[in-house]
Image (cartoon, rainbow, N blue to C red; front, side):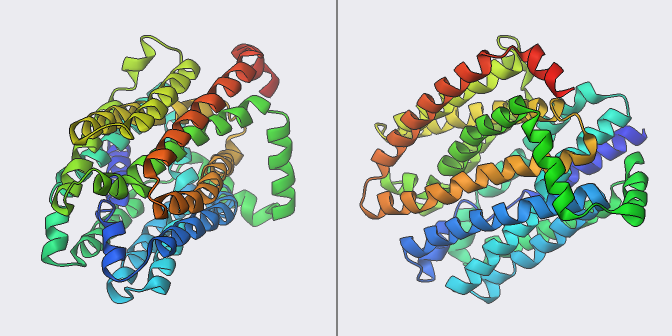
Length: 404
């Protein structure tokens, strides 16, 4: 019973924390308050850089002081972040909004997965981690489907309503974060912190040593870049420009995002379907290829084709995230650095996004959206072929033995 209660609390936290109801319309919102494309994408670039700078410190805080404290801090920060577009609808207001979003998500990114993985491990249910993580993601996505379908209409009715609703959702996530029970390892974390907290420098040295002796883990992190960046490009940064270029109206934005999110939720809830045909490593590469190909084909599609390829892209995205997270967690041997190492992966992801964002703005400003989609697809597929060759040079079992 205790186990089921904790899992339900985790589902509730992830559901409400991830419910950013403004996501389908934030680009249009910023345009309506007078921001230009260069300003919008410069904010996105700064957001990714900030996330990179915050990831390691917040991951270390999670490892030192406990995962729950970071979950609570992230949820509280999210509440404040979503009030800024309402009361400060300007470039500086949105910049502060996204900086706080970066802080909030950096608190959560490593700590949430680490909390769940450690809880399932301590409960002798580590094999259930992937399914629980997939279910949590799927439930969150289904919630977005239900809400996003009407968000364009709600924004037309009241411009700031998507942000007010997100504030309410974030406040509920705070309540769930406070209900999550402590892990058995948190007591040792607190004792270690009070008695002999390692300096940041020593922690970084230890982290560097771990990665130096675990090249396979580092390569897996680099593989995760492709999944994260493609998903960010297609479903966040360029989602609204893509629909605009295909002549979809604002009122349909939420419905379209709801549709593709339904496919992503299906994939997240059923990662086992892919494992019938591939092992985890081959699965993430196959799914990355599907994502890249779908993104490239959107450039040639009309409205119906765009919906089809966005749906295929989202289904592949849903399958890939739980599998890739399981792979990473399985190859992290030292649980005391789990959140920090997961934060390293997030840093790499966001660093690449920070580099890509200005190019997106440049291509979009010159009316070359299709060229950017095709270029992104081709570069991803070439990079994945090279990385897969490198990984296959060292058998999976040997890689794990070297880490142990």
